[in-house]
Image 1 (cartoon, rainbow, N blue to C red):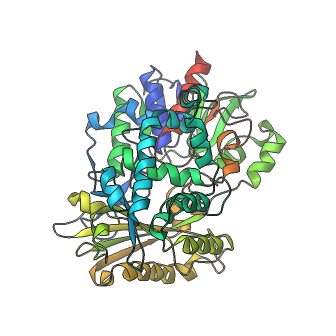
Image 2 (tube, rainbow, N blue to C red; image 1 turned 30 degrees about the horizontal axis):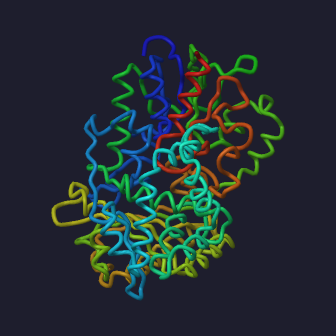
Image 3 (spheres, rainbow, N blue to C red; image 1 turned 45 degrees about the horizontal axis):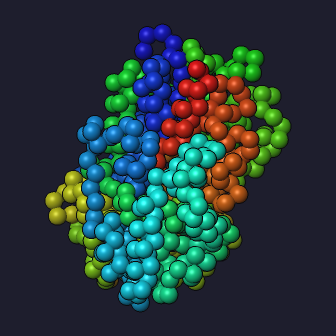
Length: 507
């Protein structure tokens, strides 16, 4: 790029790339600085992690939003060559007692495969209502706050139905809606993608949204690996005159007076932003404690960032398999994602153990079967498997003392639902919370969710009031990561909304 860019984006995770693409499309000259020397994308990537020819997603792996998020609809990555695949079932929730509930984009299939038939009808009816209001619901939950127009579209009755759902606990909503344990464990289990337990007040929102978007956008699997999504965004950025630099770790935001004017890299290189806009796809605390001079940040903000509430750690395992997982229930063999959580009581016990700093003895699992949909992920006839559990970031004794044993516990959990699983394993890779943070500094303590996703860390409190509209305490500095509203998930809206605020400020 000849001359100074107009704007500099720190970090090339999905939100940073979306922000960069939207700014470039608006005519700004954008430079993205990425610390990783090998690839862009942050936790959105893929690599041969176990054996040659077995392609594993390093972080995010299943995507409800490519066709329904305003950010990804604007970029239209499928027109740029991204191919999305789908399984027969989006999510399967089996238990050792043989009971099972499944989510599908086919609502008749949902009704037939959701445990008790009455529960299947109740879930399908909820999903039909959600489909009728999805644009308004997404407008409320994903757009830059405040979002009055989508609220008005739900009046007079829809807003009250939505509020009754979102203001419930996950377990409370499940017990109110469903009769059987198979159905009751679905939405609270989905909420454990982050640090929201079944009993948490106002905790139903995430599980509700993940289950509903599974019936609309589905849990899409990009053919070739999650890296293709990041690659498509970088290609779009370059087509519109932007650029990206790898091996370019930012160690300081440069300021003049109280305004951000550029960045200094770890090698001493200083880069200026001609339009004086610096957009950070970083952890909130890293930005305001490490990258910005402390005397430019209000004392109360510094104090809050020093005790910033992170979410739980994540323990991930990748396997190379000789054959598909031999799940005991046939529905799981046709599902993109399998969730291992036996019951509401089991999920509540799991939550309590993690919050006490214990390694769970019956770990809840999110299990991804990408190669069922995308055979390019593995050599002919063979398969990949991807799974994670939520764990304490720093267990007593450290992860070096526990990683192998906990991975064996994960294997045993799958073996209990799929007898013979262990005999299919050709290779295994363990990724403990410190490994995730080493891969991507934004994943502090292995937290995939951009900080805690408890109700009091959402909306105007994300990352903290009054900085919920992406503008940081330093003029010209913006936060576009999942540490900003609307938070966790590969929807690109943190970057999309931040870009809109930047363009508004620049006129």
